[in-house]
Image (cartoon, rainbow, N blue to C red; front, side, top):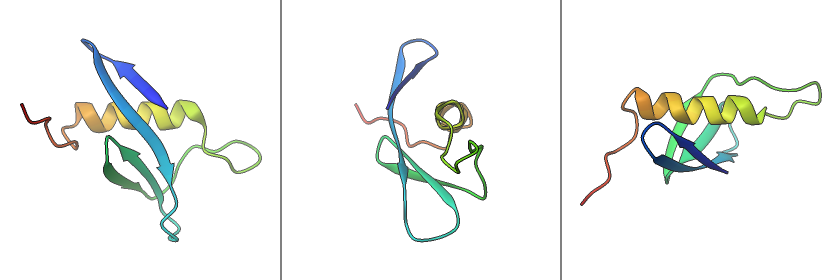
Length: 68
């Protein structure tokens, strides 16, 4: 999914499965690991959580800056 926020920032975000119990998301090619995620009644990660987690990672400086 493409996540847009801030002053024109855009990120390619996807959910990963690395075989662990962690919830792993890929944001612009960088993996970010979480102990838990907000899930629906069927156990699927909610899109809103995925979007908010990517934005939070960006705002917290967890993503490598883009090279010019």
